[in-house]
Length: 235
Ligand SMILES: [Fe+2]
Ligand SMILES: [Fe+2]
Figure 1 (cartoon, protein in one colour):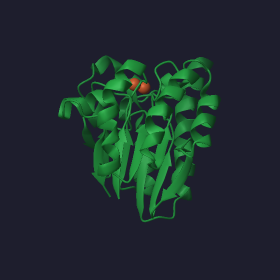
Figure 2 (cartoon, protein in one colour; figure 1 turned 90 degrees about the vertical axis):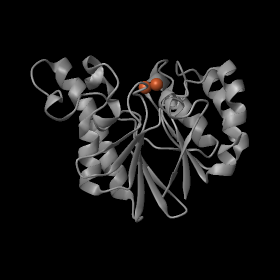
Figure 3 (tube, helix red, strand yellow; figure 1 turned 135 degrees about the vertical axis):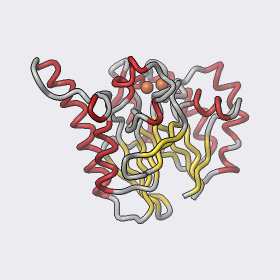
């Protein structure tokens, strides 16, 4: 299967008109499209409508997770419904299969990496924040456990490893992802993790167990190849 992946499109109408030609190429180059969050800029229904108007004519199977920007207006439930009503597989601690390949996904959460990860100690507000990161990791665990396929792809918005946030300011690393997500994937196994969110990070990395991780945030794709709006992976 050829998987086209992209993230952080932050839908803006003028930008999309300019992208339309490149987006149309997905159809010839891939069998399925993965959207790794931040589909919209402010989580507005009108932004999602515009995005769907651009993507649905491609007539490709689409697997998506939401990103933090898609939560900004508090309309995430409506956005999810808009996607699923159009046949898009929206993964929120859930899994799906397409042509023998399994996809497990969730948005993820910040919290930091390895020994730098924030722990649930002290004030209730800190505990609530850490619990949200743990909850996302548990959602991912439930999703992966559902898969029975040999080939598995994990889709996240937040980064699961430090490798693919390298390039961002070290001060903000803990806000870009959580290694709790990678620990889950390492325990259950997968062929590849796709994520976004770290716009100025790095394209490729690995988990501790050696699972490949790809940051497909739009600015990263365009660093590799100007005007690119997706990257194709074979699995
Ligand atoms: Fe983003
Ligand atoms: Fe984001």
